[in-house]
Length: 146
Image (cartoon, rainbow, N blue to C red; front, side, top):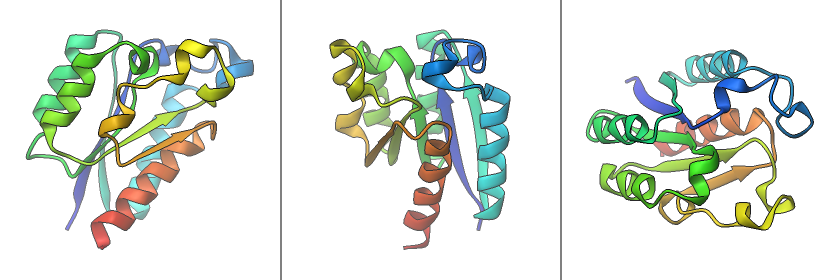
């Protein structure tokens, strides 16, 4: 049975590869999507990969996942630290969530140390670059087999 995992990306992640490469690396969002597709295929997971710079659109996608997807991998980007609405949408979806960040947010500015999303996530991966997405999907594969 194929399970669908929704992979969501927040604001400015469309600029990967060109925005602050010393912090976020040189891989593009298309590279991340390809990594997720390949990882999903190797574990019989269907991947829906999306990015938006609009908070309401992200919330709508989360709502639509309820009862349809097996889990959510989310890099909420700056909304990690600001959006109670995204946290509440993730909670309402009643799906397992894995939060991913490319950089180690705990080595960065103080305001990045707090996440509203972490409280509703089964796990948090940070500082592993784009490999964090692969790790999150592999963990979902493990959870779905258990």
